Length: 517
Image 1 (cartoon, rainbow, N blue to C red):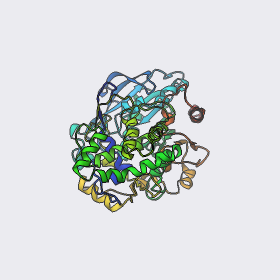
Image 2 (tube, helix red, strand yellow; image 1 turned 90 degrees about the vertical axis):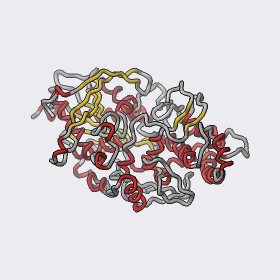
Image 3 (cartoon, rainbow, N blue to C red; image 1 turned 90 degrees about the horizontal axis):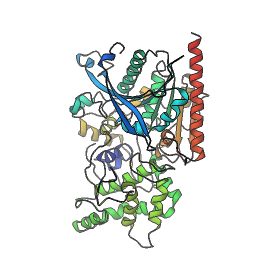
Image 4 (spheres, rainbow, N blue to C red; image 1 turned 45 degrees about the vertical axis):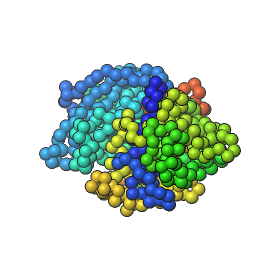
């Protein structure tokens, strides 16, 4: 939303994404409290087929960062030889060659493996790659994920049914990246140039998996906030919500207590028409609410996403937020006098997330748009990206137990398919990862900040001398990928310095090996 707007919209996609880490808010979820509901739910020789268009985008620090948009003729299905598999769609990617060194040897390609959304959104929030490109003489490439943004294999019908969505898988996406990178290098006469892949969050998972699956294409990977262990029973299921809770509890015990108390009060007050009318006024909704479901989602979204983006400097990744927004939310709650209404406190805190600019007249709590093109994620959560999360009794959220059976039934009702619950760990591994990757993996950095709820599903310890975990106590969701600012704390500066140093080592060794061939 732009500051000039006077109606604050809770983007529908932010509510939908809660299915991944807040399944208790999804249709058919089981909980000790009343169930809430949501709306149904990261080849050579054909250069002449590329289409290009110049584009400039505002970087996350407000500086104009140039890139050009291109479209690659990508095959629909890389793994079968059926008549439909050779269907071609326009696969979007972005280039910045401002810093690329072409001679005497080609500089590296730094490739961002696109997430579950519009690639331009992720590009403008990945200033780190722009910051370090001059030092490496690197070509920057940002590849959109199939079925997101403009890369729609079936146009406007891409998400209409399981028949089309069936081509939305991680393996297809990784193959897309491999083919596009290989073709791009051939067309640029840079076949021997080293490739390092970068990715944050789901994109970070893809970057690490890409290094493991396509080591002949990418010689290294930086995976930031990549919860590759958030599957099966590898990590505790309550870790995500427990971390959000700890973030708020660390700032203020009163803040934690208010949020923990608000859910039951919200349900009780909204149990009749008079209460719903009162709540609609309290939440300044643009229309009178018919149930408390969307109001619960409104608060959930604010608290969870604020914890994820608890950056030490102002940012506008998901919403415009101040530095350390969790602290600021808790200051708002703590500023109320004793005995003030708990719902008013919670709403005032959530308003920091939705209305930090202070110019919104009302909140469109129900509905909303999808500005970043993220709507395919629920399909992925219903097929292979099954990442169980629960809520413990110690959490500030209502208790909830995840059920594979209920997830399966919900997905069958939504799409006519059942999830392959353990496919990700079968395809990419995860169990005993320290023992497995120590023997065959190399050149991967896993970076995490412990204030990020997704960190509990990440790799937090070194696996070998070349599979490194860089962990910061106060870091948030892929904070290291944001543009450097003069206000960055020393620990962020040091984390990025270590990343650059490690990548230099990879590139130098690669170039030495190539020179000896």
